[in-house]
Image 1 (cartoon, one colour):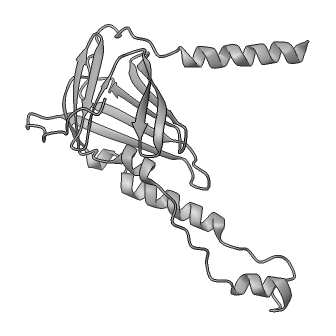
Image 2: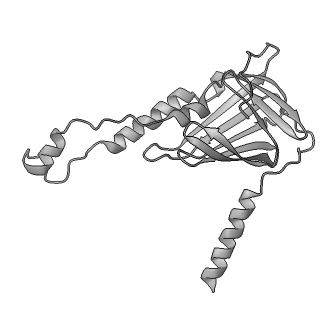
Length: 210
């Protein structure tokens, strides 16, 4: 009986998580504007990806077993092997982390458009949809969670990701967080970006992909 109750609570929790992104804009929250990256206070996205790959390579390196340092038998053969070739497909990660130098956000009651130099995406708060990603297609959900706008992607192939946008407590900065889940042997990645408003004209973005 306890097991059944625990399972039901787990299912209820999952359903609650799936429906936690709301369509209603929080009162007084406006993310709209043209925003320029503050690199000094932001994660270096390229370094974060490089560090993740380095950790993955380390995890793949063969290790000597106890008693195998004498240079004989299977252990010696293992140590003599050249490093394994490691060239994982990180197109999904690169796509999610690309072009963070600036953002333009247009916010309406029933739509949010987020653009950068690489792409422009339109989101309907509270909506679930299927979208194209480098590895094929993904289940996308987006909407408001408190004062944050959250976008989640769960592709058929490749890592899941969560992207959130919110204003700093004083409203003078836009904070973006990108969390990319573990993908096979590639560890998870978390990147935080800080943007400040700018009067400079934003570079032209490509037409909307959604």
